Image: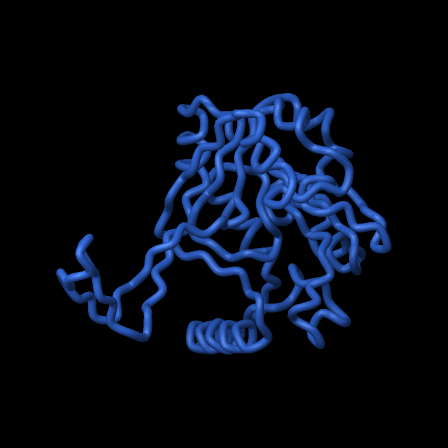
Length: 241
């Protein structure tokens, strides 16, 4: 039952790329219109049936905990894991204190400062049909090149031109589904992308990829944040009229 499936929402980072805004606010609490980023994350999870949340918090944790409380006013259940700001546990290490709870079954991990409209239910159901202990959501993104590209055959003769082609990449969206066995590969202070996933591959464990085209954004620059906040604030203003 999805309502009983636990989701770890990672909210402990310091958001250094978004300073000066994050001097006074943790990144997940930066407002977009009248609501913080994290509220959009929580609402998307709830919309797709996930209501049992564990929030890992650290930097300026009180602001997150005071706003969301036990989650009841948002229609979810929230528990908090508090980490030492001076000794950040990183993405994987931060869920180790919840090992006993998360080992009860399949669980998800998402970032508390990423925006997406991805169907979390479809992602979960996809993972349940795969043989691996981990599934990573991969956002399909195209990056246009500024120049035309020439293709050569083995004799160095040009066979065709592609004028400013779009190079497609699959971006790690920071949305993961795991089986309890994943804890056998997580060590203290580990990062999923830098430590855990390479460790899984080295041990020949299967990591599945779930490719999606829905909206997704990691607000990584102040200009990105300011533009998005202005857009959503304008929409809120129009809707109130």
